[in-house]
Every structure is written in C-alpha cells, then in structure tokens.
Length: 58
Figure 1 (spheres, rainbow, N blue to C red):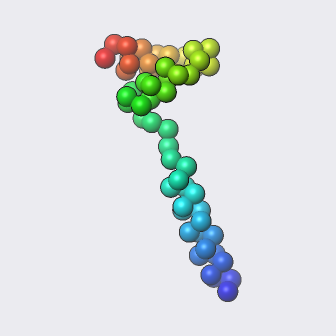
Figure 2 (cartoon, one colour):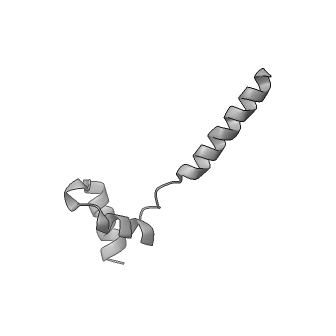
C-alpha cells in the first residue's frame, strides 16, 4: 500500500506541473501582449529593454 501512495502522489505532482504552465518566452507575441497589459511601473529594467528590443523595434 505504501508504494501505491507514492505512485499516486507522483501522478498528482505530474498533473499539477503540467496544468500550471509556463510564462511565454521573452520576445514572443504572447509575451509582448502580456507586457502591454502589465503596468509600466511594475516592469524591471531588463523587461523594459527586452520589450523595446523584441516588441517595439521588431
């Protein structure tokens, strides 16, 4: 029974990991859209530079 609990916990962990998803890749269309919606006061210096490089100067 102990092994079955471990297997079930592993399966649940894998499902949670798959469902949480990841943030879009920097420079992708989705990332640029997310940055447009994010208040500019919350941007880091790196995010602002990446936004200019990938979304404005495309």
